[in-house]
Image (cartoon, rainbow, N blue to C red; front, side, top):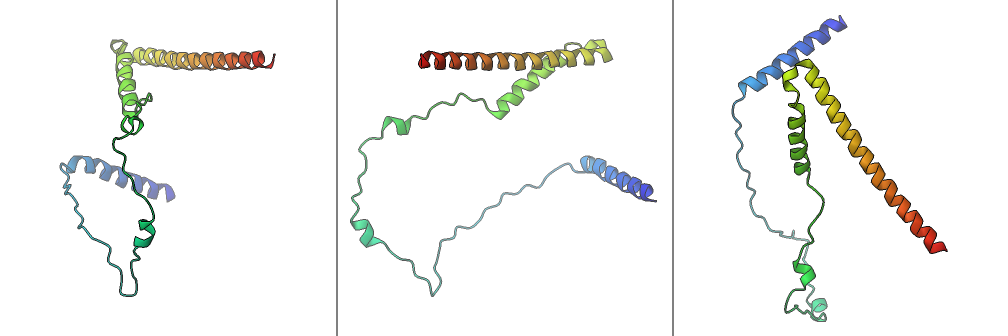
Length: 144
């Protein structure tokens, strides 16, 4: 009985999942604009003014902005979209390399992708070990 109920629920869900893709052909996306409101205190609440505190502080404005404030350092990190784009292009190029071979082409493309991943991991590990070895030599030279 339990299996029949689960089968009916699955069939019902699959039917509506496929119908939702075929029947919806537009989306009514209207913009939302909220009104501008300002803070108004209630009758029992007052807004304190700090005129006495601010009068003792000398406010100065710089005549020209400092160079560090105007220049923004350029980030060397790539973006998520850039990684997806390059990964997708690489997958298309290597995936379609053996497309004419039928089922064996899929296996060969998978093997090439795995070799690329293993190669990237090995290069990263070698660079990390070289960096660690260099730091260890610097420590030993410092102790002498």
